[in-house]
Image 1 (cartoon, rainbow, N blue to C red):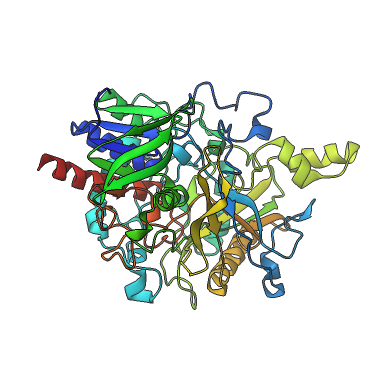
Image 2: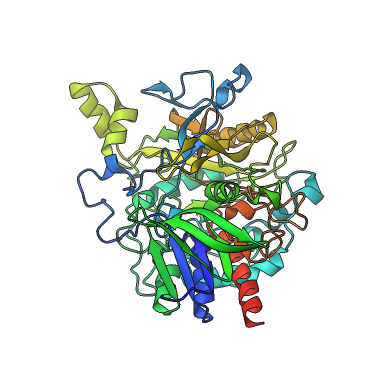
Length: 547
């Protein structure tokens, strides 16, 4: 695109991609700037290679050192039952301070972290949108679920979501575009535990195809979504929104574009300054600029650009992934390395008041793949142990018998959890890195304890006599779902963007990522809601453009 575009979008994850698709199909010229490279799903993912289990997701740009994590809290004896451990290796965190080893789990590339995600595609619980009014915590969303629901339907159709409608939990006005994926054998065994406890456990809504759709094949149940889908059946943003946006002729994408700063003039972003793939400093301009870099990198860019003058709330109200996983060995061979990693879900505890004495809900799904027990190397190192013949015997007896459950829950904002920048830690371009400050108060640990105990009860009811591996957020920070650092609201004193995603006090700057979430929800995966909000923001931008 030789001329300046109508809209510049920075970041191509769930929010940036959906916005680019919506605006381009309405005839607006969109230029997307992505810091990472493109991934070719048929060549870059390694599930057909012998080192597939050792490589994990094949990062083209390593992410481990892209952010700084401030020193974390000390561990307390009263929460010892929430320590992460393994039957072979013992405690995962041996110090008495919470570890940052898990880090911020994300992908730098075209499609963002949707390249890595399992494909869970959840609508937010409407009750979680009124946490301040109903429970005196977090903040209310300045829009209703009813306003968001039409955009949910559009996103689900574009991506091709597989699921089974459940009026009791999913608040839908229509069916999913595709039928649900069939449950794996190990999930059916796990379901017996939920049934025994009287808990509903059924198909999980997934951005994974149960049958051919939009030129893409159905899932083959390899169980390794987190390592990248080599078939294209997972609805990552590059294969759905961005593919159609580029086909429209109104969207161009520049990869390898690391945005350094935004320059403002009279409360308007006048230039986007970035370094291209060859390290040259370049600049672009457009009537509208949209940030979609995620809840860590978006506030970083804003702070490095001097935008805190528009709102002191930039970087505050950081909410992380609150999670727990328990795994045990079943007495029967389950083939638990096969099947979709999160093919079923329990919403019984999803409401904010579903647990007595604890504000904030959670959900539960299969956790065997979440514990990375889908290949022989991890079984050898973390399940069998021993040496020689004994090791071989234990491998034969254990492989494919691991059965796990994962709970992901609400994370309420607190003053000690926020994102700022560290001027002493800079990237290759000399730009200060984001610094993550994370703290889990007792209110969060009480919820985490309920999550852990529920996971253990489910496994016990499913026939697991002995646990072999447990991990959680208490002693190790590790988040892929992050929210809240540019909260949506009505006033700049307490929020960063208005109900349409426009940054308070600016004339042409918008945000479409999970940083705008006023609350995290009760464990719902945020990708669908991010994209639905982005379509709503695109609607506002298109209206302004037409005027």
